Image 1 (tube, each protein chain N blue to C red):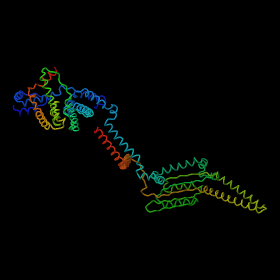
Image 2 (cartoon, each protein chain N blue to C red):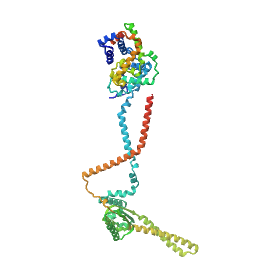
Image 3 (cartoon, rainbow over the protein chains, first blue to last red):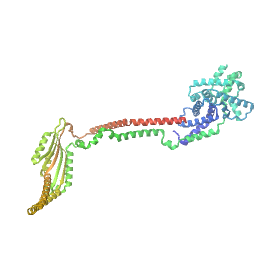
Image 4 (cartoon, chains in turn green, orange):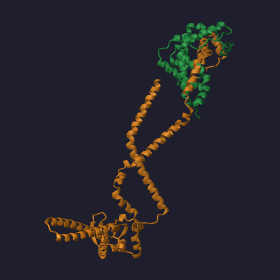
Length: 193
Length: 391
């Protein structure tokens, strides 16, 4: 049964609130600037709300939101082709993690992340979208393919090329990436301390 | 495991999956593969510690609340309701338009309306087939006659024919429509009855066109005292379709004219006396002039009196004798249930056919307007859509 007015807004908010971080950072990684990311993320939320009554629940709500976010960002990138400055990344809206048990490791990690952000922006839009959704936001291949409206096979090859390109870009600072990586859970524990 | 296997494994790994022990061993010995794995992990944790700007967090919530349509508006006019309303409005317009314009757009009906006065008799004719309707009309005629002339009616009831003509001067006029299958014989019968009654034909028209029914229009004068007998006889001629009778009491007018005549005659007698006694020429001339004028008045009043007497003494009977064609003859029989159902269905079918043909005519007439309106709506919608897209 369709919801209207305040009830519709409440229901949407309840579903969208847990995904707002993913939406925002998806936009941020795709457009590269905090201001543009905020605009795109807001546009994503609005478009999703307008189309909320047509959401049938065939896919996960977060996947549906990512689909919209990807389209909004691709539209934005198309309209702003060549205008984006990599310097805007300096203002990118993530905050450095609190100091962990090993300051050296934490610093190394933050430098790596900064390099990774820059490297991401050097990827073509479609390749970046695949990496952002799949590797950054953790969507499955099927979900990512659905969000980008491409076959899974195409996604796999696109991802493979994008990952190789990233590695090639970052190979100049390869020493930063050669220390034995810790499992993700372990790193999360450090950050939470 | 070699690098190729490792990369394949990495490519196949779903997000969040962990490496196998074998893959870890290979990674320890291969810097490239270690870098690829580190990159993968860094990607996963890139935004882990990121904080969503508060401005975004609040702004999208406000935006969707602003965007949320008012409840009443939505509940009242939902998309299906709008669709039904639009369909109902279109249907109403179509039906209303058809009903409102059927008389204007249908030339048959238009002609029927304009010639209604001329054809009413023919229109009326089939419905009055059969003796009952004629009798009913006769009764109506009698009723109005009695209402108009209560004194005469009483006398009529007592003495049959209106003996009151001696006292009251009444002009009686009768109109009859007769239908016959034996036109010639009935025409002769009318003439013979008239002669027997001592009446005469004042005016007569006989039509005998080929392939159409013949008719005769007769204006007869019948002695007033024999009028009822004549009408009685006419009832047996052919089939009486309609009879109407009117009576005009001219007693007062007759008396008035009679008195004035008497006055003028007295005046004439006096003038003639004066003429004998006149001494001068001028007196003679003046009296002559008065005599001439008085004579003119006497002649005029006498004529009027004679005219009235003629109309009173001889009633006017107008007869329209029409020959019946075989196609006009309707056999009256008791309608069975089947006949009634069949008739009702046929009537309904004819009505539906007429209605849908009217509707088709209406649609064809309205088509240019509908197309024009549709074109405007499409253009406006396209403009609104483009404007929204630009925004």
